[in-house]
Each structure stands twice: as structure tokens, then as C-alpha cells.
Image (cartoon, rainbow, N blue to C red; front, side, top):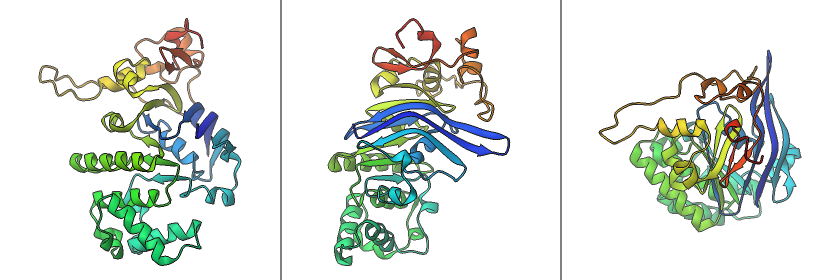
Length: 319
């Protein structure tokens, strides 16, 4: 087990109290495994991903344990975390246009990343490393002398992927890596990620709200809703045997290409106010199966057919 998260709580301090963005999440990641995190916008996926690098805003407070290779990095200070970021755990951010410095040449972005962790590496060797990883993502190394604004959206995303992998980290967090890209480019980026993950034998946390994207890569999928991890299982079981009503509703809301089924399904209602979250299950107000206990008490995690599910529908199963 390369990563183990226990009883993780992340709160954002705000004027009227605090936002309970992630609550009591327990999840692990094995070597060479891809873990998908899915859910609506605002459910805590990106907050959870950024907490692994401790790059959350200053008003965020992390409680619980984030164990990386046996060390609780949740307790690390900024100086200690700088030794982890990029070298051992890296991140591919949502928007490469705002993540890449437009006044720095691509080669300088790579040199800065490499020199931060390996100052002893000569510049020519660092450039060789950069050219190799750029070539792996389908970019001619000669373009290292250009600026990021000279690249298309898909090419910028490839640069971001190359930057995150140049130091061969053990874990890569891909936060919405195909946002704002067209379908063809999305498929190409997914293929690049899949290929490089296998070649480098790294673990990956894939954060997305696109269930089609996560199906391409993930070994296991965690479904998040309003800060809770409501279901966790293999990708196959999530797609073919979903247990939580929210997971079932998410899957039904995917547009169906079957010409005989033109009904567009959606999940009625809105996410709860996380400054004042509901007393019981956070999905209860939108759930068609909600019982009285659902509005009164937060459900524990139940183990059902190798699936972990946070739902009172399974209260007869051992928690």
C-alpha cells in the first residue's frame, strides 16, 4: 500500500463558520493502481486530491491521517512537503493555460522542476530528460524553445503531463485532465496517460465528473457526494452493480445513445449547504429510497459484495 488515508476531514474556515468539504474519508491506493474519484462539482474531489500535496488555500484545515509510504505527511510542514511535491507525488491540474507560466519557455519550466529536486544534474542532462518525456507524450523536443501560449489546448495538457512525470513520481494526481478538450483530444490524452502509467509503473488518482473518462483508466472507483465517500469498489462493480442510490442516479444520468431511449434523466434537487450540512445522510433530501433514519443519522460504511457503501439501505449487513 503506497498511500493510506484514514479519517480524513478537511474544513474551510468561512465568515459564518466552516465548510465541511471532506468528512471522514477512508481510502487507500496500491502500487501501480489507478483510483478514480467521481461525483458532481463541489463534492470534494479536488479538495481531497490537493490535500495529498497540501496545496489547499490558507483557510483549509486538514484533520486525520494521510500516510505515504508509512509516513503521515498530513503533519509535514512546508519545507518537508517541498521534498515530496513533484518528486514523489505530482499533480496534473485542470487548466494548463493558467497552470503554465506564459512568460517562461517550456524548457525553463522543466529545468525549474528538475533543479528544485536535483540541483546536481547538469543542464544538458536535464534538457535530455525533458526532451525524452516530451517525446513520450507526443511533442517534438525541439518545441521546448517555445512558450506555452504557442501550443494548442491539447498540446498544453501534454506538456502538463510531461512536467508531472519528468521526475518519475510514485503517485500522479490527475485533476480533470481532459476538461475543455474536444472528444478526440480527450481520447488521445487518456491513451497517453494509460501508456505512461504502465511504462513508469506509477499509481494514479484520477479526479473527474466524467464517468466515461474514468471507465477508461480506473481499477477502482470512489464515488463522492457532498464531502462523503459514499461508495468504493472495482470499476466493473461500480458500473454494473452500483449499490448507493447516488451512484445509480449518476449512471442513469449519462445520455443514452440507444435511439429507443431518448429520455434525459437527471438528479432532482441540489447539493446540501456544507456550512450547515444535514444531520443524517447528505443525499437523503434527493434520495428516492430515503427512510426516517436517513434524515437523522449519518450511515456507517457497510461491506456489500466487496463494495463499501455508506447507505442505510444495507443496515442489515455488517458495518
